[in-house]
Amino acid sequence: MTRDGDIPTIFNPRGRNRTPSVVVTEEGVANGPFAHADSVSSQQESAGEPLTTTPTGCVARVKSCSTSLCAKSARKIYFGIWVTVCVTASWVGATHCIKYLYLRRPRDEYTDADPVLIPHDTSDLNMTVVHTLYVKILFQTASYRAPFFTTWFITNWTMLFFPLYYVTRLSSRRCECISEIFAESIRDFRDKGFTAVRFMTRCSLFCILWVGTNYMYILSLKILLATDVMALFATNVSFVYLLSWVILHEQFVGIRIMAVIICDTGVALLAYMDGITGSPTLGGVVLATSAAAGSAVYKVLFKKVIGEATYGQVALFFSLIGMLNAAFLWPLSLALFLTGVETLHWDKLPWPALLTSSVLSLVANLLGNFSVVLTYDLFITLGLITAVPVSAGKLKDQVTLDVVLYGASFEGMKLAGMILIAVGFFLVMFPDNWPDYITRLLR
Image 1 (cartoon, rainbow, N blue to C red):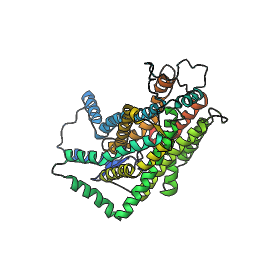
Image 2: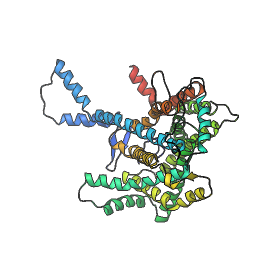
Image 3: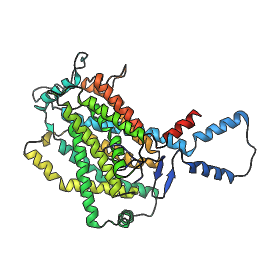
Image 4: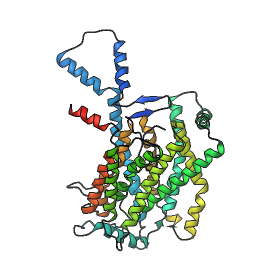
């Protein structure tokens, strides 16, 4: 999305790990950057080497530096930086492609003029209100208004999880066939006491929760800017902690409760940034926050119902969710189209944006669930919060996506709300024994 790590993306079902960074693989548990076993194993390896003359002076410092730069934990950090960049890029790209689907208007049949978004001279305007009014006007001529169809289409791509996992296994281990890998994944579920009926029932329930969460996220983009939605969705880490504390009986950590309060304050500021009377902003904030809460429920329930799972189990579970979505939810999408609730013209479907958002969502999902093989889950988690400034408005002299596309302006209550959400996000990520780390740092 299993290992005990939270990947706070909308696609990941796993629960947060409140212990120092631990990576769970099919072969066992590998230690994180601060784990004692790394230092012990390194000491044992060095103890087995023949005694040699220890270099001193500048040579010793150079050798020590090169050794630390090439250590296993250092390599994981290098990979982690790349993973953070890739998660950020895929998350931002997928969200903005979905947002573009709402704002896209085909060229008029009698003119060759390109569709124009919001003008950039917006220094004296409330851009959230202008954006909302613009969207209302644009929807009268838009050819694509189908959030549920978008959700259904994107979710179908999760069927590729197990095939991609199989290809990876086949490239790393010879003499394996798909039946062996599939039987291995099924056997792991059977060992946990799942019957076929019980397992498919659980998959169906998680499929409904998955689609509902994605639908609220995509629907909120109809009202709010992409940056606002991503910032609100980042609060799912606080919901994960609260639910884990109540349902999974995780350790109580006071600073995380304070982080939850800070996140809620940021959400409140975003909800009332345009006032209440006549503004749809409050509804959009409720949808985005509900999506964050739904994602947290999905992760915690997965941890509670499924428990620890291997990568093969996760791949199989995702593929089954995609298959159930494709097989049983298409009548609902068709009914929404026939009743006029959703609007789309099959001959004018925006395939480039739709396919791009689907591929980027799949990439974000794959990175969120499997890149822990290469790095620590902290770097994957950071991809969610770093996506906010990348997508945000103009900060000093930096111009980013929402400024270029929609002429957005981030200031006042909106900027304060996003800052509070970011602060709460990082506080939730503090380890259980964070005072010990600070004490060691001070010493």
